[in-house]
Image 1 (cartoon, rainbow, N blue to C red):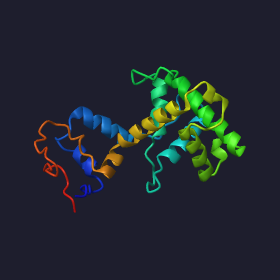
Image 2 (image 1 turned 30 degrees about the vertical axis):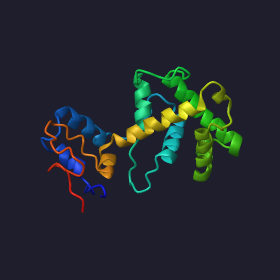
Image 3 (image 1 turned 30 degrees about the horizontal axis):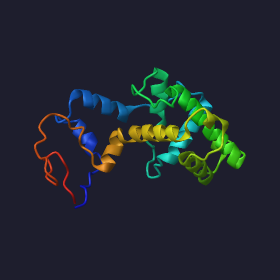
Length: 198
């Protein structure tokens, strides 16, 4: 059976009901209403690089206004927040992103003789594929485990995307309706609050 098709606006409609707790509503509404993020931690050029990397890793060709997945990283680093753990081989997050984004630029220069932002999209993809494969050139990768950095960056970008209400609508996620009372727990046994498949 295919997943239900959630009409556009499903999550936004749920936020207006008593099926969502106040704390969850406030968090999701803040993501919907967030203004354009201005860099706080990164220098503008480095932030533009992060945005370009994010656009290749989390492409959003069908959105007039893409979900901002890079802004969350910049904001978190500016606030000095972390997950509370990190791989032993990895430096602290701020240093890891500084080295990692610098390493992406070094790889772009070595492979295409231009900074990442000056490359075509296929060239940018080739650089990121080399980073993902652990084969990208660049001296920064001598100080930073390339595979771990790519894994961590991709995970954070993905988390930022799917924590946004518009992305949740796309995948049919209504778990943010977190007021107790979910009683239909069998496969394909939908709650009245869940849209039915067409």
